[in-house]
Length: 298
Image 1 (cartoon, rainbow, N blue to C red):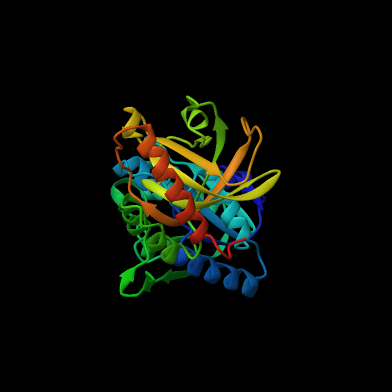
Image 2: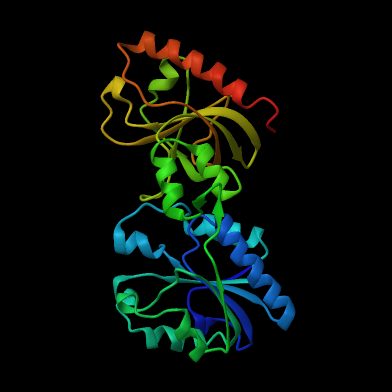
């Protein structure tokens, strides 16, 4: 998949374009991408996603994001998008009038534009799907998809993650929620109590579920079952959020390597224990619970 940071960067050819933040690439986004690809086949032109980094609500409302830009690009490629224009979303960009956005869109020469029904653009969100007809006669508005009586939205997924409900997030995403990060040095407390962990560094603002989880970790040299703790480690008076993963049946040095962590099951919330002995006993139980939750998972 080809990636650009402005519409003017791509070749001067016709396209079909989908516009939106695409945070998380959930089932609703996937339905929109399916419409995009169908229109691209009909017109025999590339299908292009025009998106924003960070997602608009990260800047305007201060919410956490579900997908980093590399994660988003990886997912868009997986779902068959030909090209992505990922525009840096800044306060200056958000303040531009809707006409400026339409001028940029014209550079993509869209035969068709595909958007969600809640799509707005330009300063004060003054632009709507109706305005897009100034650029192309065919605008496809995809309704918000629902599942089990609830709307499929990134906001709802963030709410699930806030309570540790990774199964709820999975249902709306159509896949297990995940996070990618580099293994960095921590205080090595886990190693001293017999439970060594990989301390995962993820970008500031990445949404993570809080608590203890059964996970699958994927790295350059293998794939392992394990358990993850996301939290402040109250037993040892931790002050900052940590994302730590213990890999079952693994021995070695992972420092500096990137791990891709998939969250499979919520085991419990974060707790403060009376001491390290109580913590070790609970970790033993957590490991048994995680292994049970991952039976049959490859």
